Length: 450
Image 1 (tube, helix red, strand yellow):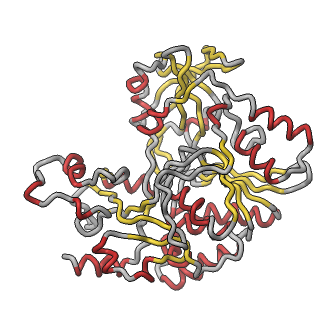
Image 2: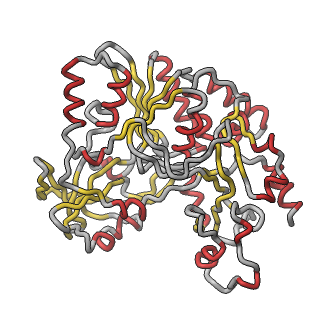
Image 3: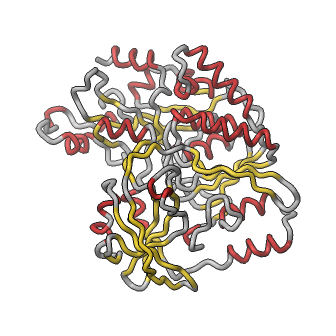
């Protein structure tokens, strides 16, 4: 931490630290008050998360308050291949009870304990009509399983009334190990001859920086591997040890982290060729992002902007312009079972601009929570997608246009989203720098400061 931590100068001296504290408590005593995102976790659990693996029923939902202190949950998405998907659970479904207990403002943390701890539970569905919630007698028994989540949940080609082909992709997790999912989708889009792209990052809390660079390369016009994608600013020790040209990171510099090839030169060539083959060469992109979008999602929005027109539809994002690395016991077998994920770097675009810690403000403000029940992913009835399509094709038929505008003006004030639940249980993560910083640089810095 004294070498790598971005706020390393604020770490208390050894004599002021209590080395008898439990690992989690001790780690907290090292953190600067300005640090919102460093964390400590059991190493095996962290490794699973970074690979998209979790034990879960497969649902993600938001909570809403209605009728004084009552609560209902609105399912935002269901992980493909999960137990919930197998049972027919879908986005837009609403439930009011868990294991037979009605959700209220007073009990939801206790009642949802199985959800927080990766266990199964029963939900009781409800209907929403004319701003009224009515509980039904339909119950679904959700089981929990070990799920390997894909990074791409859904993709579709949407046709506008004037015949424009619009690629739509719901991308939910920046997983370096699953970059091939992006290559498959973008090859399909290119073969179909799409003219525009809607990139849906509305719930994407981040992940690996390398695959963020790959995604950006697949989208942008006039892609070239040596173009600068991101600039790093470390603490004073690291900035002195790492030359400026090694802190200006090109697309190419990120490729080894998404390649299974061990030879660096071969990895450069492999990923560069894959991007060139599937690159859409677009002058503009429509990105759906909200206050549930963070980290690598924000990096793509912000760092593509100097190269092309980025049209942001949705809400102001979380504001995470920071990167972290995993520090863990690399011995075999592992002796220390904890890993730390400290913030080590502030991020900027090719022009050195990284001032978005307050979040990225949308070009078109639309809060999907105003339009319940939620429409399916990829649906033209979804308010964010409807807005993007209207911008893409002003020649939309009058009936389609008036319908989408009516939808955007019929928002409901009957329910209020419980933001505290979101912040406590869907925490954004810093941009993951693992593999993106040259190992030789790491070894040199460690040796110099040992």
